[in-house]
Picture 1 (tube, helix red, strand yellow):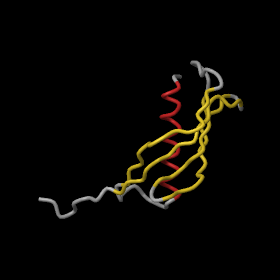
Picture 2 (cartoon, rainbow, N blue to C red):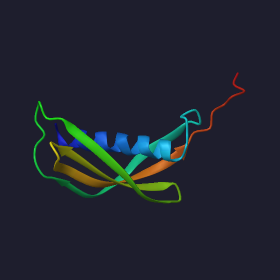
Picture 3 (cartoon, helix red, strand yellow):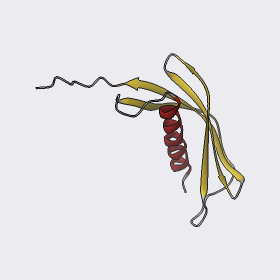
Length: 98
């Protein structure tokens, strides 16, 4: 599995964690936009047949910027880790519409 796909999967996991941590049901139109990576490390390849287990942990939030610590493991062995910076954006829906 390419590293960029592992980062994408970790970002999706962090987005879900952010969504449920704020007790949102998804109807408010909240977007989480990936803005940065820090401390990213790839320790070994993930090959077909491996089961990649992802873990995300909320670190903090400042002005709608959330920070998550994420890691991927195969058979309990750490294969990738990063800290993600995610921007939270509320999308206003036009309920009156034409």
